Image (tube, rainbow, N blue to C red; front, side, top):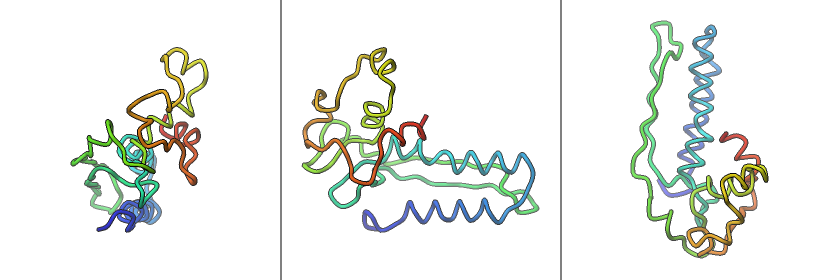
Length: 148
C-alpha cells in the first residue's frame, strides 16, 4: 500500500485485538506485553518523517505470533527487512532521518547527552540537511522514554 495508507496502524489494531480476546495467565500476558511493547523500539529505529507521512515506516516487518492449542499467544517473532538505509545520510526538504536520533537528542537527560558528547540536531550534517528537526504530532522526548 501507499505510504500513510495505514498498514502499520492496522497491524497495531490486530495485535491489540489478539491481546484483548485471548485470556490467559502470566505467561500469556508476558508474551502479549513483549509483542505490543516492541513497537516503540522498532518505530524509533525504522520510522521517519516523510513529506507524506510524519511516522512513515522505512522498513518492512513481518509479525509471526504463535498460539497454544487453547488459542492463547505463547510466542512470537518479528522479522525486519528492506530498511531504507539511504535515509541515514540524506533527507529531502521537509523530511527527517530515523526518529531515534531526534528522540535521543531531545529526550536524553543533560547528563546523558554530556556523557555521550551529543548536542542539538542542527550540529550534525546527517540530520541538518533538510532543516526539519521537529514533527508537529510527535513528542520526541516522550517517544525516547517509550523507546527506553
